[in-house]
Image 1 (tube, rainbow, N blue to C red):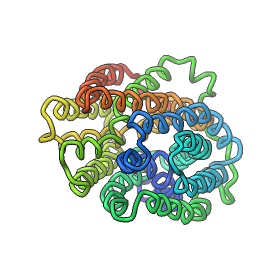
Image 2 (cartoon, one colour):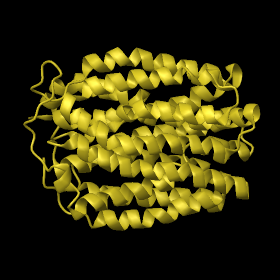
Image 3 (cartoon, rainbow, N blue to C red):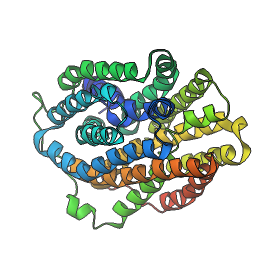
Length: 397
């Protein structure tokens, strides 16, 4: 099928996946995390490590549930699961403004929205895109997940000054409203497969079972790559705005650089998606994450003068990871059991996201800065590059 026909056939699904990915827990909430750190410190007296632990709770819950949600999507269809999960996660956002300082309440809410939030991630939305796009799969995944870049740009750029003026509780009400508007749109636009007229899942796709996939070396190479990336990078993203403010930047200035990170995510999504349709994706990954290492090292050793370089580098890291998980899963293991296989890959990926915020916050609590965390992130990119260069040729369309 030609590029034009693929996009003609799949534009509605791509739009639904774009919306769902953008408002999901791993996008809108994740890219706003840094906005709440200082207000919560000032109002409740929580440390950054304590605040970071709430993200760790949510990602551990997601890690444990991701394989199950993947199986549910394979069995019941992605739009039902995705819409229900968006609704539940949005309702939990509406409870956050009622917090009054009990740290356990923060942790309980983080636990609750993560139960539903796992179904608002790429487990559902990349499944839809992979089913509708073959020749332009990389570009379509990039377009779908560019919505996370939109949020990475919009949340620091607009939510940071909004919260500074109206308070953090108002920010959560805005996020709640955005999610509620998205629920019917996602349900109406998504489909499971091109032949699907009523949203029912199809079972004709070929590929490995989960049991077959986990017995391959390739599965564990891919898992290792994204575990290292998430451990290195996903603790730095929510710390980026506080890092800049600690260095003396105003909330507006820090928000502008945070927005630059978001723009970098969007550019990386589209650029890397376009390139991996034409150049062997593991080679593209090796080059991209070498660049990430240089950006982290520049900020860690060179100081705030290199904040823009670090913003671009971190944006490229985030812009590549989830796209490549979905792309590698489809190309190495097929679509027949995509939800289950991607779910386990994603579970391993977010295990690193549970570690990153805690050790990053701990480094700040002990040293008063994030320099060591940036240097560690740069060092972890070396094995990422080496493993990527050893991946085999693809075996599935």
